[in-house]
Length: 491
Image (cartoon, rainbow, N blue to C red; front, side):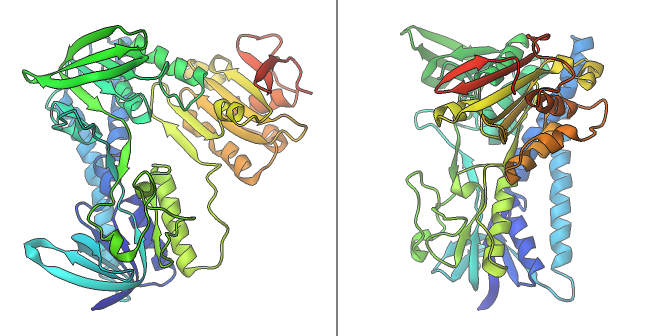
């Protein structure tokens, strides 16, 4: 039986990152993947959906000047498949070369992995070939899949999850999206950007993106509706079924009224579930959470030599988080003692129109936790780069502690190039620093990140534009005990 220092189950972003980190320690590592190297992160997840989004944003820009511009869905899909092929080829060539160098440390097997005990894994390959291998340590990175609804027939052609969008042969004339979280809003954005699909979005809550601040959700909603999308606020799905090759769905609203609507396609986006089935977890004694994910403490399961990373924990389903968790787990196995992972400085992007970037706590979280805080908001219309791009829809918002130290608790940016503005602030959140140094830096001009600098200057009472002059564009307020009070001077 072949023995390894580490067996990685799952060849998606997390598994691949973990395997590569183990090589850094000179360890012999086997990675097992049952479908495609790269996993959902390449084929059905982030890469494909963000390529769709990038394409749709280009189309949206064209349609601002040429409203009658039409999209060929086959060409759009080809662009997505080219992106997938490029990424897949990179990872495949990288893996093949690693398997053919003189001092081989990386090994790869395609097949289904099944734990026989905490050190032994059975691999079921094609043609009923069975192979057993063992390792000192095991890292489980089997990812997740879209959640299904028990009473809805998801055929991945007419009613689809995010996995089935690539099965469309043309742009639908109408489509309903069930689920107003990040993924649902992203796909609603993509199809509404293209201008050929009437988009309906079912929002059970009173507003979309219920985990985010209301001002963010309001801008996103307004932009969706300006592109013809219909948001069903406060609506619960009573039924959804395929009739005559199309979709009929019935809603019931909070006021008791009902509505029946017919569309060509439906996209179900109500979260994801961990891929934990048929792994033999019970043979190794691995504990699951109440939600059916693998329990872990700083990436280590209840079995000391078995670790876990990525979506299979369902804690935070982001590629950057999964990769970081996998690398952290490997260092815990083979490296020096390190401090636990911190999730407080995670930078995220929501690919909407406009895009939303965030780090740290939101106003909603601060209020829920009773944390006194100060908030500054700066409208995009005051930013020279946004003006030059003619993209002034959006704002910067920074949340700090309500004391003289003014440590950054969180930040939200919605607007063009929002993602470029977030990383410096994420560093301040991570290192628990104040704002003075970043406020005094010489930022490039014109740039979106100057908006961050001007927010910090507002906190320090030395902004170029004064909030008591541009009251509609610059806002400052303090929140304590659930009450927010506007202020003109923050000192």
